[in-house]
Every structure is written in structure tokens, then in C-alpha cells.
Length: 310
Image 1 (cartoon, rainbow, N blue to C red):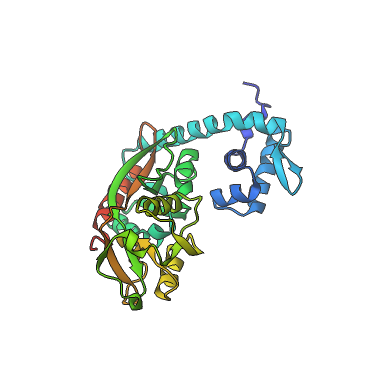
Image 2 (cartoon, rainbow, N blue to C red):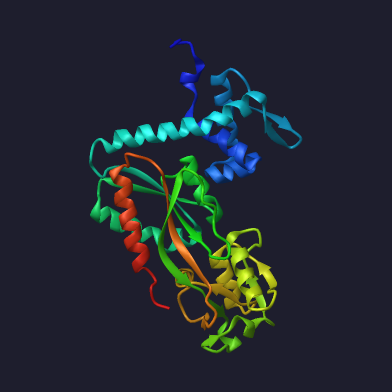
């Protein structure tokens, strides 16, 4: 091989940034998906361009687009990153020990409810494994696992709005959760009800473009009504706070309700069946690092035993 070949010096962080820009189309969205600032992504792309000897992005209006060189490289970058993950995984698996760092991507509810216990239980069972948590939106978890931004991902799957099954990833169901209706105590709703019974009330809804938003609206439509949004909120804690103030009703599972313990919410069980599945997203790779198997086992145990009461 020609030792002057610049491809031997291509920075992995730059390749990941290039893939993110190619997928998300804007620097802001790419930075959010990677968990970096836009400035950091810009520096990574600039470093990639220097190593390649050609710019990979160029300014276009207020944003950027891939250059011809960048587009050509992006077609192969995913393959290069996948090969890197396999090589590193094989080297780590060769030790036969559950050791090293595992990066877990999780949505905000899990980050708040489950991550502290995950870290504690993993530390007791596998002290040589370090768990690094990264908060992601639910809809970005699968893509982050596929890109290798994280090693494992905790996601949510809805029967009425399933998350994409992406090549290079597998989805393992961990636990089925049933939704209940939450309201302010002074709403004086019954302990059990049909969704149609609250069709006239204002709702705190997740944004429509999200899988959760599609699932909630789909359940309401199946019950014969279109929910009226008093507020559209993606964050569970904010949703529960708005409900507690009497500004609307919402659907929530036991894990979600665990973010607001106390007596300022009333829970009504639904006669309708509205469910979601907590899933573990894993990369398709062999051999597999012992540390990933160790973390996956602890995740499964913790998810099964946290907030199991209705």
C-alpha cells in the first residue's frame, strides 16, 4: 500500500459526522443526533476534509450540502465504520472478559428512571464494565445503534406506530407496558374508564410526527374521536406537570408515572388496550463483546423489575 495514501489517516469522528449530515440533512440535526455541538461537528468535518484532501461539505444558503467528494465518501463511510466496530469488538471479545466501556443510548424516561439503578447493579455484578449513558430521542435510538454512536439502545415500540427495523440492528422485546390515563385529582375521573369517556377533555399530547404521538392519536381515533391538544409536549416530566396543574389529561405507563411520585396525579385504568413495548436495540455483530452481553443481561433484569406496580 502506498504509505502516502491519505485514507489511512481519515478520522473516525469525521466519518461519523459525515454520515450524520448525509442522513439528517442539516448540521443542527446531525449535531443533535451525535450529541455534539454544531461547532464540534463542523470541526470534525473540516478535519476529515483535510485528511481527504478535499472539502466534504460546502455552504448552501444558511446550511451545508455534501460536495461531490463528500457524497462519494459518504456512500462508503458506513461500511468503514461498521468494519471498525467489528474489528474493535473482535479484539475485545478475544479477551473473554466482561470489561471495558459500553455506551448506552436511552430516551429521557429511561435515563431518569432506570439509568441510576443500571449503573449500580452493573457495578456490583461486573465491576470491570463502565456504562456510559447518552440521552437520545426515542425515534433516534435505532439509527444511533446502526451508526455505532452507541453500543446498545433502549427504545420503545408501539403496535400502532412501530419503530423502523434498520439493517445492522436487532430488536429484543423486554417488557410490555400498558397505558393508563392520568389527570389532576380534582377532575374526579373514575378508577376505570374508556378512552371515549374523556373525548371531551383537553389533552397533553406528544408531537404528532413522533412514534409516540402517532400511537396516542391512533388509539384515540380507534376509540372514535380526535383528541384536542391543549399542549403538545415531548418531555414526560413536563407532560405530567401540566396534567397535575389541571391543564389536560394524558396517557402514561408505570415507568412514566414513576417520574412524578406523590398524590398530585390521579390514575384511571383504561378498559381499552393501549400498549407499548420497551425494547433493547443491539448491533448485528460477531464475535460479540462479553461486556455487551453483561450489560444486556443487567438491562433486561432491571427493566423487568422496575415500576411493576400499576
